[in-house]
Image (spheres, rainbow, N blue to C red):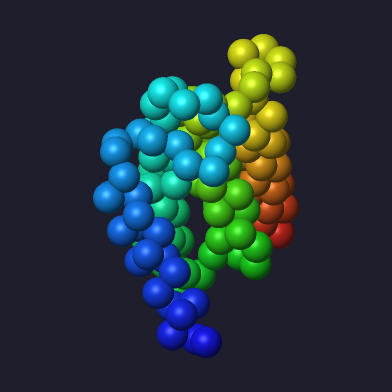
Length: 124
C-alpha cells in the first residue's frame, strides 16, 4: 500500500504531461477554456519557501520567528498564484484566497514586528 501512495504524485505528473496543454479535467471549467498549471507553480514556490526557511533554521531566531516568516512567504506566494487561477472575485478585484493570503502576510508581519519590538525592549 505504501508503494502505491508513493507513486501517486508521479502518476499525476505523468497524466499532466500526457494531456494537451492547459486541458482541465474533472473541474467545473467549461471545455475549451485554457488554464495555467497552478499546482506546478505552487510546488515551485513551496520549494523556494522551504529552501529559505531551511537555510534560516539554525540562525538563532527567537521562538516563532520562522513560523511567522513562513506565514509571510507562503501568503505572498499564494497571493501571486491566485492571479492565474480561475476563481471568482470577491471584493476590490481580489479573490477569497487573495484576501486570506493578505491576512496571513499581515499577521506574520505583525507578529515578527511585535517580537522585534519586545526583543529590543528586553535588550535595553
